[in-house]
Image (cartoon, rainbow, N blue to C red):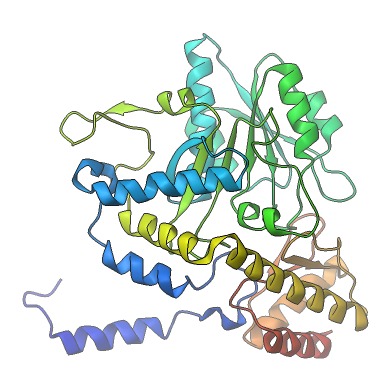
Length: 378
């Protein structure tokens, strides 16, 4: 830090210099984030100083968070769900598993484990470390969904929870949550649905999928407004069917305006809560469906175009994630060649393939340009 501060003009020039080094989303097909909606940006700026970690000072912001919880709960089959706005899927995943771990610890259980699909987000590796829980990974079926029989084989008397993914990060696939719900109810096991990405997509698809609180066995769900919800970063959400799970997370906060805190972070952005409230109110279900419909149309356009040049999908897209199949030795070359043409795509693990996420910042012209470059590259 310099002894004396710099002028506003110099700071703006420095910021612009750094901004130019960031990629813009226009040619990014690897991210599950996007430009926030303009109404979200407006609301975020209005509430920059608001801290939900000391919510008694910011009652209007707290009211918005409460209403967002009700809106998201209703979207996911339970208007009376309990939860809070987190920093995103990783925090939500940690908190869901921490809640059931704390409850089972009080019951005297030790050496606990949870069962997740092989396609589970890497945050579950963090969970294994942070919570000292054994994370067992169930195999997949031919459609890259978790194999229910594999889940059942892994359950033992130390299993405290099972996880299903509603919108896998790599393939955009939806695990058979209904079948997992049946297992959870039969075995009296906590079922957590990671819908960080799919939560704002699946309810608006033409095909009906059962994945949320409408299934009695679902105990908790995560959903990220800063992905397909068009809110600002960071905006995630963890929802529980029963309030007592939040009680398992509470710590005393004697010097704040609240008696206790159930969130993982202390200071929490009220700005992203306001942004989420504003964008959900502005778009409504109709607006969200319009966004999902367009993303799905463009996803099909990409996959159909890839097929015409001889590149099949690994699976037919379930949501706005397309994975294109190449010989394993070729995938890395294709991804690197596209990067040289300023495209950003990614690779899945198993089976190894090219992955493209079609977010709201993508338009038809972008898809056509990408397909042209893809054809030249291959």
